[in-house]
Length: 377
Figure 1 (cartoon, rainbow, N blue to C red):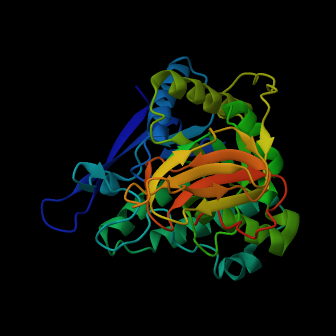
Figure 2 (figure 1 turned 45 degrees about the vertical axis):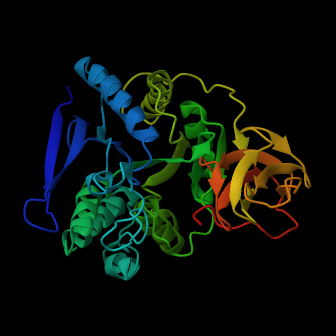
């Protein structure tokens, strides 16, 4: 068992509707480096939950053997509010049904006014400056008001993540290859992390258009201060998002393999003692360009390419069949690639409506069609 398995009671919107958040802690509180890993912020994305469950088993074993030198916080199911939302047995965990808010958008802004609040107190020692900034972030999070169950849940997570050296948020797509997203400032380190975990590809965060996702909430303060003060305030928090395959990728053996990868990286950064193994040459793809293709019609969705296939401009990715077409010889509507790229993600349901997302291509050169858009769309 972990050194601490904390149960946090969250307020309900109505009497008798309280929920609980379970947090697993390994190592000594306050030890460095500190890592925070969570899954299921979008509660209908289960792949990461299984991975972190397996990771907790591995961490319990290395803690028992006295190998943990840092502090590691794991939240396998970060959204008990969302996981309890269901319609006809289908979990509706991406948006809070009461407010319509996306659980991974509009996280608290910890950047505004931060530079001015610490400017006069910064010294020459970068380590002391990092401690100062973390105290200021703690003060800001402590001042947040839980005006709703959703905000209370966010505050509970933020209080455990704000001072971490490493923040990891696990998600998954409908159907997808496992991939990692990272900001440009952390690209080189992200390559090492992605190689350790063994994911298919590394992709930039892209333009979130002020979305304030979970990982951005904790990375952006340090990015802003580094731009303002240079080396006096280093990037003291590395925050990454992983898309761990698709919603059907809840397989114990696969989860164990990825959990071993996360453990490998935690050892590499010093949370766990011992020499980290050499990086494996796993054929990691580095993608910088994307094409998100929507359906031009409603109907039945037939894929002509598999996940991992490389395509060229003009290749048919999918067909949309209208089962009600009066002419039985009516040709299906086709969706064609506008760029050279790899099929990384696609829609799970084989029924599609006009305008629905169908497939994402990832490659190295932007499509001439101009259909590339934010990965957060």
